[in-house]
Length: 339
Image (tube, rainbow, N blue to C red):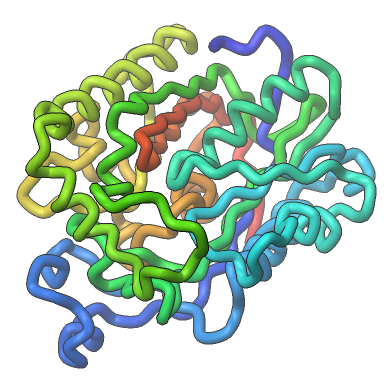
C-alpha cells in the first residue's frame, strides 16, 4: 500500500557479537560440504548474550539515535526465528520494559525471516490510524547448540546471532516510508514441517532437523513447482510495492534482501533485477544471515557507510518460511550523522 499519511523511520540500530571465520569452523569439522562454499567469510556467533538481550541493546541504540522520548513509543513489536531463552514467556514485554518502559504494548511477530518487515507493515498501519505516534521494532536471535546446528541447519545459508531495531514515527525521521506491503503463499509451509505428526511437547528434536524436513517434503507431489511459486511471489510483491511507490527498479538506489547466498542459483537480488553492488552482500558475507534482523542491520550499514544520499529510494525485501513476504520502499530525506 502507498501510505496516505506520514510514517518515518527515525533510526535503526543493531548489536552483533564477534564474527567467527567460516574457514576456522570448516577446519574444526563443524561445516558440512554443502555449506562450506556459500560465500560467507565469517558468521556472528554469540558466546553469552541471548536473542532478547541483543534485541534490547539494538533497541536502546535506535532510541538514542532517533531522539524520540521513549514515552512517545506506545507500541513495541518484537520478532524472532527461534528460542528466546524461556518457554511460555512474554518476550515482547521484556523487550518493551527494557527499552521504552512499562506502558508500551508489546506484540510478538513470528513470520520467521519476514517478521521484521512484517512488523513495519503492521506498525505503519497503527501509526497511520493514530493509535500511537511511534513504534519500536526489534528482533533478536541466538542460534546456539543444542537447539540448532547453525552451520548445517539449511542448505543455502548459515544462521548468525544478533539483534536489530527500527524506530518508526509519525512525526519525524531521516527517511519516509513511501510504500509497504505484505503477502504470502501458504502452500509452501510444509517445507519446514515435513511429514512427521504434530508433537505434544517441545524439545523432541535436538538439534532441529529443518534440512531433513525439507527433504521429506521434496519427494511429495505437493512440492512440485515450489521454487516457481516462490519466485512468482517474490516478483509480485516487489512489483507491487514499486508500483505503490510510483517507482521502477531503475529508480532504486540500493536494495536490502536477506543475507542468503545460493551458490550456483540466482541470488534474490538477481531475481529482482539488481546487482550485487546494489545489495548489502558486502555486509552479509561478513556476518551471516541474522534471521529477522537482516533488513534492519542492512539499512543501518548503508547509512553508516555513507552510501545513501537525500532523495535516494531504498527497497527493503524479506521472505520467511511459510512462505511470507514483506517489502517497503523508503525515501531518504537526510542521511543521519551516526557513529
